[in-house]
Length: 160
Length: 333
Image (cartoon, rainbow over all chains, first blue to last red; front, side, top):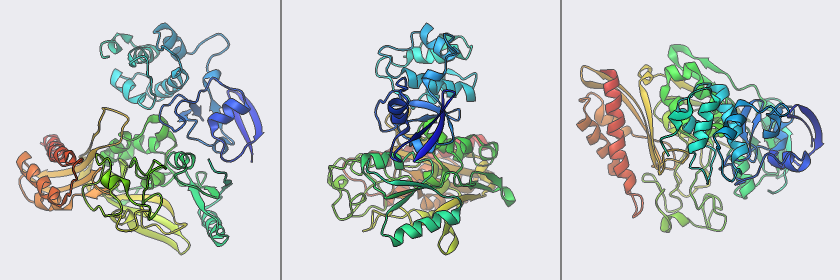
């Protein structure tokens, strides 16, 4: 089936098999490997992208479902060398260790702050619950999301 | 994933026509809405289809007020939108709370109301293709009865199946007066929510009483008005991002220290969302006290048949139900 999808600002038209998952379309057809495959079964959130501005797990969406819609991946956030506040905060707070979950974390944090610009620490933890990180214990990730929201990140610091 | 064809229905009637046509050809079909559960199952091989009929573009997303404070929610309204909807939050807070207790932000952005009602059990054996499961492969046997029983049902089990219904939303709906509006080949059908899901009996492969090709178009929630005071509590093995071991949805009206009316839905206990009718009966007209609440859930639990691994669920419910009702009582005072 032919689909037309706007990905990170560029419109693409491609022939895809109906069973193609969105994440594989992004990675293998478009070469957008910034979006990673983690668990492949909608658990870990590493493959999170925005579909019409709202976060989804791209291993849990068919490419044909994105036909006629707009997708934003981790590769479409920064404006040239200028990072978004979420990206900048992840860098400053060192909100990663191995970095594999980071694209999904940043996309979900972007969605979270779009719907709740000043979340409490608790709201950050709940809002990020669909994203798993096996390295950090989430400590610096929560700090980064709070910092990106313009709030003092210290409140995120005490609860490991 | 096994290959399938994909097509988009242009109307409810068109969706029904496509399914009927496929049926005549001996082809299997599946409706696709948000797909959060279905796509995982197609991927894992739990389910196969020949034709995927996408209904997600149909105009069934609105939340509208009904007479006397009820709400009609389109079957394709996204879980995230319904949970955040001001009317839902004000009128039936338990519905919003239950939805937010389920899945994750990403899945709630895709998942629909109708799909939530039709999500399938998370029984570990149902999801493990290497083990027998009567629900996945009728007649093959039930691995959960003799296997890991931690998550098994307490009430209404059969020799064929001991799985529980996984939805949080449905526990809240079980506590309210809900009608599921369905379109089928013979027109519209209205199903009491209590009659939508079924106990396993000897046909555990059937989760609901829906007929082949029927499509849920809306969910209507009528009163009771006192559901403005309602709560959802979910117990699970970790604080977030897990299915319930048990859950409680409750609405309570207290007048002069007496229970004027009460509704209790229980999750994690049965093949269908369980309404605790026996406990409600015991409570109505009686004292609105923690002791009375504890006695009522004890009566409800008399029908529970726990195995060696899941007796803890009875304990959890005997603590959680009085706690939720007491919290609602304090809210009323």
